[in-house]
Length: 331
Ligand code: AMP
Ligand code: MG
Image (cartoon, rainbow, N blue to C red; front, side, top):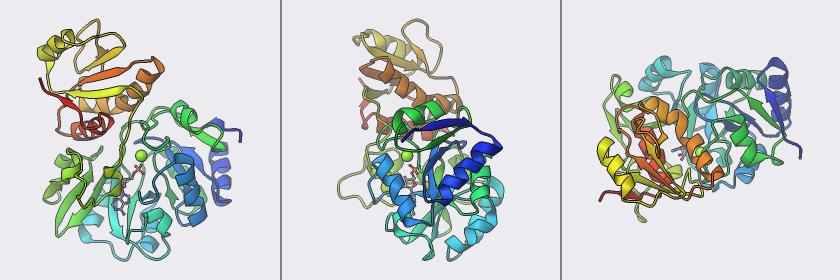
């Protein structure tokens, strides 16, 4: 199959919608990362997403809508708190778990009785959903386990020959996947941190963070969000989170063999360091692209100055610690 990359335009949106209406899959930009989209209500189409990504069948997909009305047929009820959060944070990088109705196929929900729903803010994503008139399941458009794609070129690297079309909407604004939440009694339970932060959500209800966000899941853990148990975001290079900051991170570099190694630093520490960005927002935008670039450059080890865990930093830390297979260097 020939994989075409087209810029976002009325024409490319129409072409994408045509493919999707016929049960096919296409890659679309969103504000988080690029998504691999199919009709969320078409079991066969959804199964081809799993095949293209090599994604485990029990890892459910997020269903993307372009207007609030589209959520109604998908869910048995919409809690008041969810309505308030949707009003404030949609369209945007917030995914909410609801009890699902029968029209959501098991392939989409990974066999769960719940469905994850989000309304993306990206113009291209919204235009494609609107043109289709049905919701789109759209996990990240990378091979399962690899760093998520934040440019059309990243998608091409992983999906060339497997999908007919990639809509190029430029670099993703947020750069890490959406925040995923469910409700536990009246509390907001963060299953995966993202662009909508715990701090932002805490204006609406008490917020708790799932222990799988920062820690390696134990073998006997009941995992609420199946995606959290898989190895993720991993480049070929070995990644280490280094629990040292600023001058201590600079000194740390001298203790390691720097041949074929990258040292991702928060500040501009000069030669021998790769600029990861001074703020959590910039780090989120750069993270996946840097991990992919490390591989392109034949880098074998990537040492990363530990990010701040506040705000979007928690999402950066969450992705990084998985890319690192939970390896934190402390000494
Ligand atoms: P991705 O589509 O690759 O961004 O991953 C979607 C994330 O949302 C994964 O971590 C899933 O486990 C999680 N997710 C999707 N649907 C549900 C659900 N019904 N309940 C809990 N987590 C979900
Ligand atoms: Mg993903």
